[in-house]
Length: 140
Image (cartoon, rainbow, N blue to C red; front, side, top):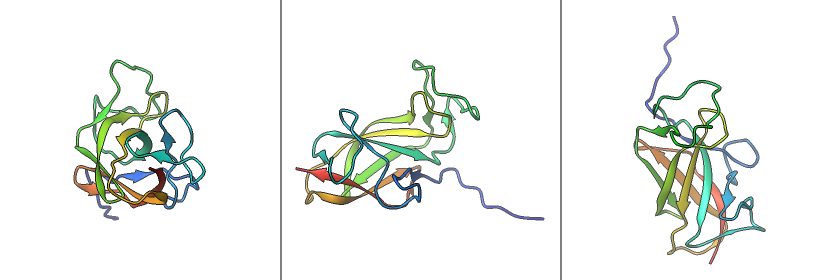
C-alpha cells in the first residue's frame, strides 16, 4: 500500500522555460509576453498562469475548455499575489478563458515601492499556500 499526501491547494506558476522556476510565462497588459525586453510598467496589469488552485466553483471537469464566459470556474480558496515582496491587487482569479480546466489565470496590478528590474520575484498564494517564487520584468 502506498500513502500519498493530499492538500487542498498546491499552486505553481507556469514559466517560460517550463521548469517552474525563472521567468514566468506572463502576459503584459496589451498582450505582449513579459520578459526583460518587454517589462510591465508599475501600475499596469500582469497576467499569470497558475495551476494547483484546488476546488473551483463551479467544479472543474477534466479536459473541459473554459468556454462558458458567463460561468467561468473560480477557486474556492482565496488568491493573493506578491510582486517584489509587496501585495498586488488581484483583479481576476479564475479559469483561463479558452484553456483547459486546471489552468487558472490571475490578473494582478503591479504595485509600486520596489526597484524595477528584469527579475522581480512573484508569488501566488492560494488558500494560504505559496507557489514557488518565479520572476517577471518590471519597469517604472
